[in-house]
Length: 256
Image 1: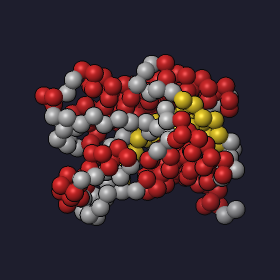
Image 2: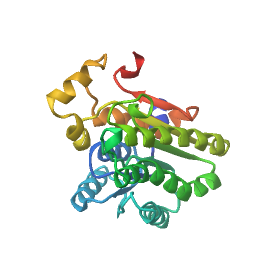
Image 3: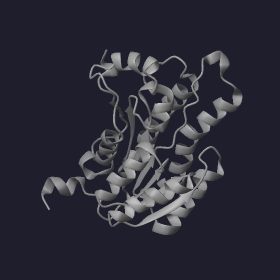
Image 4: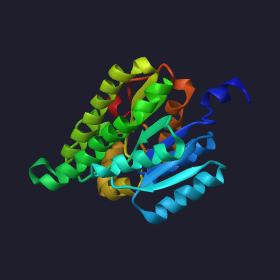
């Protein structure tokens, strides 16, 4: 194997990915498995868990499927406990599960606010809290938190979503301050609109999506593979000096 391929190889690594049944999470699982990682795939959709498990196993990797609800305290802890019981340690944590309940600020209910914060911010914290002790013991680990450009720039109707993602960005920086000394790299990936099922729901109609595309210098939305490839880089030894960063993958949206 060429030296540069070795730097991107995940052979022998064990990764946990939340929100694994569709969109960015599904593609990240496929890409990480192609790079050699064994996977713990976490989601709520039974058929989606079967599909992503089949994709991982097709790449010749081990896969544990865990059904868990990231909106609860128990869900992330259950997922971490199952992962550690199966593999002993987790080398790569991809906090991808997310929810967008977009409304004007005056219309946000406490239920929608709490659900958004719980899934997008509390669940990544709980999962990291559970798996990082073993990363510290082995003095190696990668944490990739999937955030959003709306965690960096304000978007109308994104009050709770933007607050949760902005909080995730800052949580990631605190992870770096506390855990980098143990050779644990923590970063956020901040995509523009990606036409996942959630992205289609919010931006799929031309009257909503076209004005947003007009603000992106590249003139298009992103693909799940483009985000998954960045996750692969941040999961590999090629990124060992990169930590505490909010990495925009936004077609230039935030450059303006």
